Structure formats: C-alpha cells, structure tokens
Length: 553
Image (tube, rainbow, N blue to C red; front, side):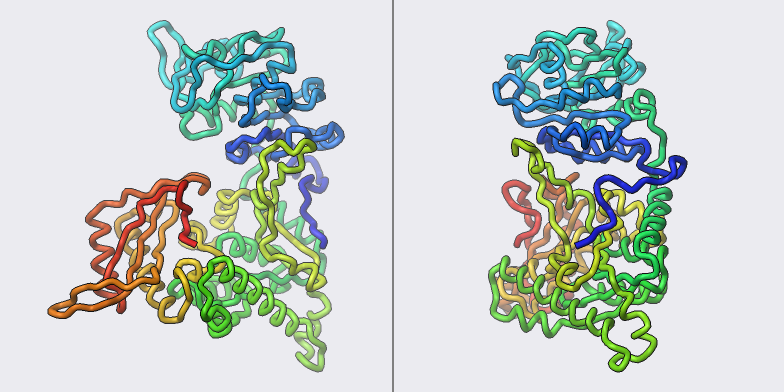
C-alpha cells in the first residue's frame, strides 16, 4: 500500500509551508491530548501528537517551535513513572507542561512532587500572579487582594512540593501552593490545571499566548491554506492519474470528494453504493449535491435488494456489521472493475481512462491514525487506528491517497464549508457506517427500514423546527423488535415500538442524554404515531454514556 500523506509533511518553500510553525504534543496518556492539539490548531498553528518516549532523532527531525507535555493517569511519585525525553530540555524551545506534564518537568529538573492531602477534581478557582509572560493580564476577575482569579478545571492527586532551580510560582489554590510555575528565561512553564478544556474559561487565551507570543508561531493553519496545500499535494502526487472514491454521503467522504474534484476535476470518479439502509431521501440528496450541483462524476449503485437479502434472518449486530462491510467491498470492487475493463468491453472513451485509475481515496482523518501505542514501554494511552475501506487498496492494486489524514473532524467540517458544501450536509449528525441496520434491533426487513426512515425524519424535522438540532450532538430513532398494544379510535391495535435518542457530548467518549422540552417530545410522539403506519408507542432513551453507548447496537 502506498500513501502520499505521512506524519511528517513533505518539504515546501518556507513562505507557503503551512507546517513550518508547529507544536509537538508529547502524550502521557491523557484523555485530553487530542483536545490540546485541537486548541492549538484553532489558534492557527499546526500540531501533532506523539508518544511521550519519542526517539530523539524523530524529535529533532520534527523541529518543533514549542513542546506541550500532556497530562496522564499515572503519578510521578512511583518508581516506574514515565518521563519525557531528557533532550527536550536542551533544544532551546519553549515547553508547557500540563498536570502530569508539569509534574514530570519538576521531577526531571530537580524539584519535588508529592501526593496531595486534598485531591482536586473539577472546578477550581486559581489565584494567578501577573508577573509571568504566560498569564500576564489573563484573568476572569480580580480578588480584593489584587490577584487575578481564573476559573479552571483541575484533575490531579499529586502536587509540587519543591520548585526546580530557576522557577517561580505563578498560580496557586488553597490545596495546591503551586498551580502554575514559570522559568521565563528558558520559556519553561507548567500548569496544574487543564487550559485545553472548555471549563477553563481563559484556556484558549493561555494556549494562544504560549504558541504565538512565547513560541513565536504565526497563523498559517487556516482552512484556506489547508485547501491550497492539499490541492497542490494531490496534483503533485497523482500527476495525470485518476482516482476512485467510495462516496457515502458522510462528512469525511463528502469533503474528500469536493477537495479532489477541485484538484483534478473529472479525473475523479465516485462510487456511491446505496444500501437501502440510508436516511429518508439521502441517496437522492447525495446525487443532487455532487452530481448535479458540483458536477462530480458519481456512479450510483442501487444495491438495496442485495443488502437486505444478505441480512435476511440475521439478528446479531456484529454479524450484521460484517455482512454489510464485506458486501460493500464486493460491490465496490465490481463497479471499479467495470471502469478498468478493456476497450472492447467498455468503448474507447472509458478505455482511455482505464489504465490511469491507479489511486483509491479515502476519508481517513487524524484521530483514526493516532497511535500512541508506539511508545516503547507500551504505557502510553492507546488510541485505536483503522482504515475506513479495509484492505481495498491492496486487493485492487491501487495506491492510497488520504487528503484529510492530518485533520480533526471539526477541521474537516470547516473545509467542507470553505469548499462550498451545503452546511446541512457538513454539520449533519453522525450516522453509522452500517446505516439503519444497527438502528433496527434484531433482523432487518425492508418494512422495518421504511418505518424507521419515516419516524427518524419526523424527529429530525421537529428538532430543526424548534431550533434544537444544533444544540444536540446526535439524535435518531431506534426500531425495537417488540410490539405493544395501542388504541386508535374505538379499536385496539398491536404494533411496533420506537425509541428516540438524543445526546449532548464534546468528544463522543462520554455523553449525557439531552433534556428536550416535554412539549417538543409530545409533538414528536404524536406525529410519529399518527403519521407512521405500524407504530403504537414512542419512548425516550434517558441513558448516559457510560454505562450505555450512544448507538443501541
């Protein structure tokens, strides 16, 4: 398999290199490491996450303008505690340690860390001293004694007991005499609290101060610059070759399609496999957006009968996923082979392109490929990597192009808007790859899918009508394999049950059920029961994650 996009970007002229100013984040296993990277990028600066024990040669090759040490679940007070590479303290670049990152800085530079008698988890108010470059004039309010006060998020069980040489305290709480430290001469800083989380109200300003004023980074990482860079990269990589893309209608593949079309025009061919398990009118919307409005060559394959046939009698959710995934690959290969057939089979126009189809594009994004398990000790936080088209590149003898490989989901959405995709497509709620098959509990039937599609459309329509759609992170309807008695007019009926699910979340790792207004839920329930044949009861799922997952299967 070949890929043009590696973790270290290709060299470009300094004036156009969007990676020229970059921040390295060394990951000690924090649940917030990706959030740190996103906050740095929101400040217009490229950042990458690497394992805490990155070899010195790789670290120097990365050539960061600054380094951030993440938090982590361990304590530096134990004998086997992990440490940052010693070389970072001799590179001459600014360093910011957050929580565990600050503790390991202290321990490695000659200070002391001890278990705290009073652990701090959650909101806290920090007294900030204004004599450091990092926190100067950054405050939420001022105390009667003249200290700047910061509302922050804490999550620690240890505290600094002795500062290393050259450092001073720049923030404190009653339980943490050193909630922040600074060595302004070397530009080394540490924070006990987490500036990357939204609960720390001035967190963005603190990180912006670090990357711009202290590290000296510019604002190169913008959607417009990313698009220009990606287009140039694709053109330089594929030359006159053609690219195939499996278009699903999801955000990632949609943005890839728009980006590649801008880069190579009609040398992009999209294959859209309509499984019959999509949302109401979704297949038609995909064709309207890409084929009609954007002028992209899209081949639509109506495979509803094949998918429903393959799923007949299957109730196990994992088996349903495997069946759908394998059949999708089979159909995609069949359609790709048609495009690559000989002149006699396809005609001169198609044949002229056949031998030029050498690339497969996929919408891999940065969280998919982060692998902190690369740590030599294996103690770093493991984030699963995957390729969203499985083994297709090798099986089809195609090289791989992944233009979104460096981007987080929120960055992908910004690119989609900048590329002219409809906002309702770019900001649409997540939809599982197997589609409605995992929102129909048990066996999948066409009648169940049709019923679920209508109920789901009503739910989403009402959320939009009450301006609630953008206030929840994900909302959908689940079809339950049970029947319940109901009353319609003077008669009783024994029909199906559906469950509404709406959640609020930042990272989809944890989620709270959305407290939708009762009157809205009542209207949704009334409409579904009256307008969707076969449903007699509507329920609302009030489970959080954990213990429940967001999807039911």
